[in-house]
Image 1 (cartoon, rainbow, N blue to C red):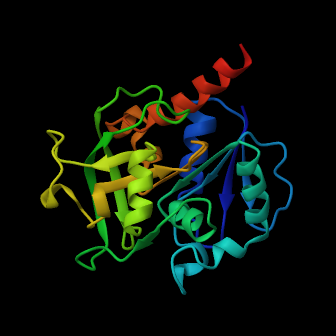
Image 2: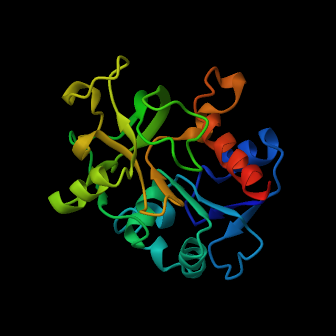
Length: 233
């Protein structure tokens, strides 16, 4: 399995992801400059966190027009895997690969913290190593991470099992105190209807190395690897 990590001007978590996929998982990984137009060698494409194009217009709004995005859309349409983390999630919504939008946090503050969240769907290549309803802790760092969608879209996401991660209390309860940014339905991550495109605001790559004291995020990357192994058996 070969990973590609997209580098936009302003990306700052690209090498963190590559460290996990190449350094910890021992999978071939290459950094993909945003102007590239050939990603046919890749199995998984990751859009990392950061501030693409400085977030000068709206988070992800300019990045959606990068040449590589047309290829990523084709990649997703072929059923291949695409992961957007934080700013990458914002880019995926701007590009139409995922529904809804990420808007300013409820209290209009940038949040940098570690938060509990519940794994809602384990029937995906991204989450098969988790238990359904498992409570994990991942770091967040964003100013515009409040998930928003209209009522029909929210209902469709819930009905189709497309809500993958949901903010919660350490005990698994959902309430305003356990919702760090005001996301509707406590949504922390969603997938498309096929399940091959995942967007999430928390950073799994920042909770993958045992040296950091938390490996809850590593299960996501291991799930992808295991899905690839199962597919060729």
